[in-house]
Length: 143
Image (tube, rainbow, N blue to C red):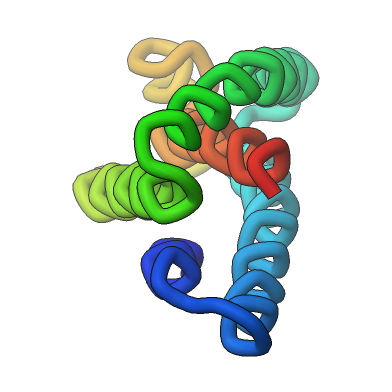
């Protein structure tokens, strides 16, 4: 949802830019709740608090680091370059979501055993949620 608004906002001004900015803000803040839901759904109960702590650590670290990124992108080409770069990052997250393996329905006992062996009780969708948190933290700081 964010990528089209970001690319659009890079070329707009006045009222159309405000409307596109509303879409950007809705997408960035809406993504945070989706990320929380994904971590909660795809992480086993005994690992959930650890997964949330890693997710928030990554998010807050990215928010701090993104201030420098925003400043550098603005120096390179202004808001157009900055918004287009964030749109490209958003597309990378979409591609990552597309290449994730499909969810396979298995009995709970077997799923618990598989997830511990393969992912340490954190599934690929939860990992994607943590990665996309990097992008949403950057967008919130840029906005």
